[in-house]
Length: 114
Image 1 (tube, rainbow, N blue to C red):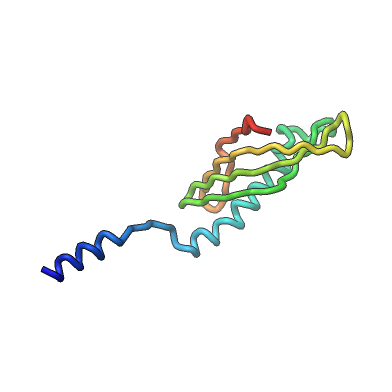
Image 2: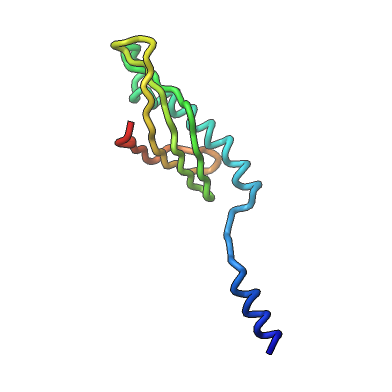
């Protein structure tokens, strides 16, 4: 009887967690970050390389990688063309997918909070 009670107490104290291996998370994050920097170097200008477009730069990022999918909360800063020297920050969420060895942005959403 005591063994059954002890087993039930131990079983109730257990919890199951599923996490990807640390090596998988760590190895994917530098590639995702490189793809984010490349995205803001090109598409981050609104798809245009025109000098009149404000250039955005990546300030902060918080990545979550799960297999071939990644979510990145980023904060970008853009120089105000009307008032040079003043930057405005904008939070965005980017969803990315890995195709082969290349990470690509598949969706982007701006936060309403600025």
